[in-house]
Image (cartoon, rainbow, N blue to C red; front, top):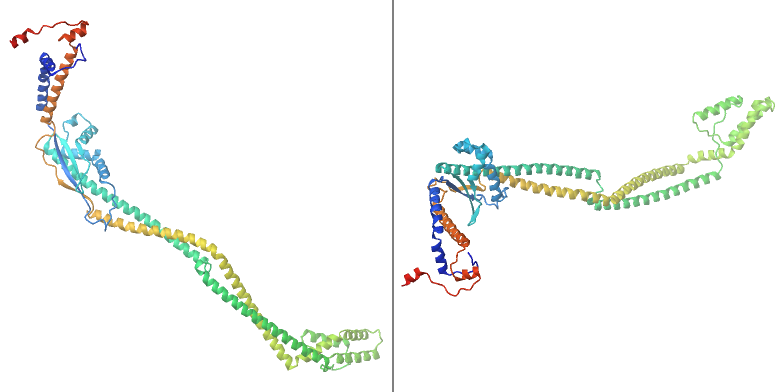
Length: 505
């Protein structure tokens, strides 16, 4: 084409069509026979589909909540992977004797891939709050195609039930194991709390008021015992003063001479000494007065002097005894006075009263010491309560959290067991066949009308393309504009076609 920028009219197109008529007709003679031959001899493939309804569970979810919460699309993908696995498809191929001719040329893996391509699971669609999906199979034998489609559908239904049961059982087993673990932890915490309460009994936060009341009572009791103890000590001082006054009054009077006189003055001094020593060892309390002993020793000394010289050992001993007696004069007098006082009934009564007072004082002191120890114990308890409160609060928080977790797991475990029973009794969500696969009456492939339509469109396209291509490659002159454009000369006149003029005449 010389002038590519030229604008064409309908007459120009008609002229081009007449000029290139054979370029337009030839593709029809080539493509149409090919399409007819393909339609006549192409292998017929049949497709059978099963419509399946996803039926909701028969028990309202308000009463029993299912543990299978995954979306139907996700479950269908999982089920499809299981059903379309090599093991399952080989069983189906063996059951229906599929691909007997292909098995001579292809391996088992290739046959499985070929069958997987022939299986089609369409995505679920919702219609009036109901979920549907289809399972289709394509093959050359219409009866086998329908049977395989129904078999695949039954495998989907079985696998769905199995999957739901496994998921419900797995959920129940998991929750049961978690419940046992939580129960053991809860029991351990209960034991720990009980042991803690026993160990720190009396220092627990809830015992603060009781401890304060008991401490107040002990302090009041300690105060009363202190008052009684002070009163007894005052009484003791008063009785001791009375005894002291009695002893003073008896000292001013002349002491009575009480004692044992020696049976004989003629014995040896050693006999007297032995007698005194014997009396001392036996614990016998002597009652000889100072005057009687002095008189006895004086007479003994005078008697010895009449017999012996002043340097005689017996005389020296007698002198020494008399000197010792003089040096212990006051002790002998006091001892005699005490002996005389003890015989006084008033002294005995006061002494007994003093003994009773001492016993009461000791009893009060013991009680006061015991109560003081108890007061210290209760004060220590009260001081330890804040730290025990923190430790107890930590234990109780952990216990409350564990108990709450246990109750939650227990409730979920019960719900999971109900959901498991729901699945085993097949009252949960199920796949229900609405439209089973039927033996197809017409082949799915090839689609003759569609093939013919495509062939005709292909012929039109090829013919048009050839005409355009031939016209673009043509360099002939068909009008004055082509001449002017090619030669660069202006055309003065053109001679019309003689044939056109004859036809016009």
